[in-house]
Image (cartoon, rainbow over all chains, first blue to last red; front, top):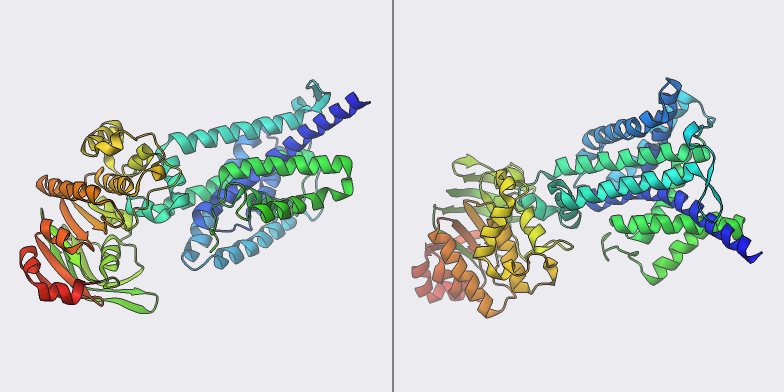
Length: 294
Length: 234
């Protein structure tokens, strides 16, 4: 009996990691955009949702899931570039509330456009055939697709880490997140960097939406839920910190899946309880800088 | 090389600089002196392009740069070392130096350029892979200067480089400024330590309440106790 419950807990832990992987992909973009542009991006959930719908659309045209994995981040990332360039850029230097309100409104517009194009009700999203089924991971059988989600998140994170640590552009981003002014006087055209960061963040959010689609289906409102949860992730991890987003994302995923094992009705509340505890002990989050918002 | 005419600057609604005029010739060390709040830092920030609201004219190597973004002015050969060093947290000394090259066409030469600059700044050479903010204030100031110098600017503007630094390092730093001058770099220096600054400078402008109130050779100013007393004593 005790062996069985250990396996169950271990399996639930993996379920939590898969859920956490989606949070991580979503939250790194949110955190990067906030850290560099000081834009609290309320449209991030909408980009996530659009990612799932673009996937759905490409599949209906006869594309396959693998094509979607490449095309969705590119398409959603490009729409992010357009949004930054033409809607957000004119608002820089006007205070944090302007882009916040703009992206808040934009998210409603995007959801409404998707409702008009695809209807108000949701769609199921089939798991690609080759990723169906379960594999024995030692503690029991675990859905292959969830393992795949963890793997993709790991690949994206590794790629992002290499990019940030090894390239000049990555160096500019790391420095610019700490001190944009010094980067300007060292000759960097920061508006181009911000554009690029917003595009990358949106593209990864779109990818997260696509990856989440087979797990939970596709509905126009899917972005709103994860946005609220991802704000918890960025607050717990520390606003603007990528490492913090990774650790907090996985932690939130595990906490949700563990509480849903022991007390399912508490699962949604547990996230906010976690946030309250972290904020009481460490108001700036795990890796955040104190006073960033002031 | 640098000519500033009728420069006016505002922070929000407050009119901070009024009709500043100054000139820096190639190979000179020119010093801006005056009390706290006289407008020295604002003058440098306006020249590099960190203030939104400015009017008048700033020409560098014959080109009007007022209204151009800071990165364009940097590309023309104008470098700026801000107050309080602004060493980037989380980056090593080497990464901070690389940051000084990211926008430069010499980026491919990165390894060689870092080796060259490390020769000039031996204190940094020993600490290239150390996290930069763990160094002493003086070493961080050296790094800030090295970071601005690594792209070989034609004119470097330094804001209060000696502030909060051990005297022995201040001497080392001023020795470095002399060397930079002898190698052809032009320097525009803002400095609280007036005697020290006038000692290495060719000329100086005295600022008070956002205007230039006096202009003379450094030697003449050094001898003029009245002006020093009136505008520079804290």
